[in-house]
Image (cartoon, rainbow, N blue to C red):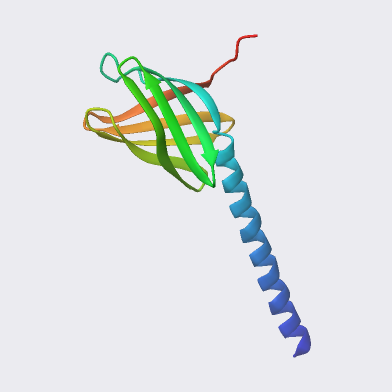
Length: 128
């Protein structure tokens, strides 16, 4: 009887440890998104195709600065869930943006009235 109870308790402990490690890995994924990014949305209307997006983390909150030809947004609040950042920004209409890292590549999607538009994201290089 004692052996069975011990085995059940050990199994619960292992399950809890696995869950903690999984959550830690997901939270770390969003941290990979912090930095400056050159973003191209090829199918967006003229003037809304090229942006520089800066992802910041401040007090466990993710903030995005978005700068383009006709757009300059500061400190847009984004939420993190399962390693993905998502939020809404107003660019003449409300657009839901989701950004994530997958297989070493950062990807983005803008959900607009025109449909879902793919965002090509490349880490911004600094000039020396």
